[in-house]
Structures are given as structure tokens and as C-alpha cells.
Length: 266
Image (cartoon, rainbow, N blue to C red):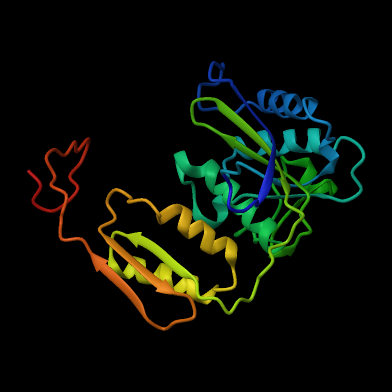
């Protein structure tokens, strides 16, 4: 029931290599290579057709050479006329741990949407243990770089030996904006009036975007737990209405885990 297609998930794959002589946290280039080769073996796409790899890229002495040398071996093996573009969103926002993989997916989708791969921050000089950075096989995105899309691959590796690989293909159909004189009703909800007002303002700024309007309606047509504020606006109109529910949810139990969540907590 997608309201809009951003990209096609061509293939996903996972494997695990936690049992290693060097310890559970040490990366395994061999396992990563096995995974990537298995993924591409199952689809009718040559790795040389991939123009960008979003790397796990933690910036560690052990992790980067294991990953990048594997990427070089698989994606630059044959048939590639231009350097393979590589980058990592961790240089932009740090390591988000359990959500790191979905941050990588979001970055690639935005790059496909905007036609620009964002700069990989703080890259000064190539790691001498990564041959592909010196021989021209790999090119780190060290500045915002125009990109026509196509196939992109994403690496994401877990602390305990889990490896994941995703292949995406950009959506060829460009977004179309449609002008209409008919009024459009936009509804949304949030935890605060400011949050609702911000969403309504964004909808008004993009009032010709039918896909955004459809997404908002699909998301907020039902009550969302914790959203005490609801509002609506007629697109193109400067006015909006926001109401806050008088009913507040009662907190019965708090499972605090390892720490306190607010001052004075017992």
C-alpha cells in the first residue's frame, strides 16, 4: 500500500561469523565476501553495475580494511570503467548502533531522490592498508557529488558477527507536482501543538505535492497512541486548527532498567 516508490529493494541477505579465533567483535572479510557474492549470485546483476556502496565504515583499524578490501575484490573485479564510489553515513551522524543500518538506507534513498551523494566528512588521506583507495578502484565521496542513481549496495555489520547486505535500484519515475484550484484538507497529529503546527506548515509549503498529502492522510487518519494533539488545515489557507485532548494517559509502572529517566525518580 505504498504511497510513493523511492527505490526497489532488489535483494537482501544476511550471514553470521561470530565464532572467530580473534574474537566475536573482530570483522571477517571472508564472511562479508561470501555474503555479497551469494546476494549477487541470486540476481541477474553483475557487481560492476553497482555505482555506489554505502559502507558500514566505522573508521576502525580492523574494520575498514577488512570491509573495503572485500568491496574492492567483489565490485572492482572486472568490467568496471570508473572508480566505485564509497561512503559512510557514520561520518555525518556517528554510529547509531541498532539503527545504523536504517540510517544507511535513508541516506541512499535521499541521495537517489536528490541526485546528490552527501559528502563523507573528515576524509583527509587514504588508509595505506586499503589498496583500492590508492590504485583508483575506490573513490571516497569527499564532497557533495552529483549522482544519476542506478544500483547501490549497502553493508551493515553487527557487533556479534551479524552481516547484512542490501541492493537497491533507484526509481526512474520522477516526482510530478500538480497545481489544483480545489481546496485540500490536511490532517495530522502529534505529541505537542508545535509538532502538529510544523507538519501543517510543511504540507502548506508543498501544497502541490499530492504524494505528501496522501502520506499524511494514510498516517494520521487513525488515532496514534501518545498523540494528544490533532489539527487540520486547508492547503493554501493561512489558518489552521489544533486541539489538544483533555484526557491524559496515566503512568502506572515504569521499568527503569539501568538508570533514572527524570530528576527525583525514586
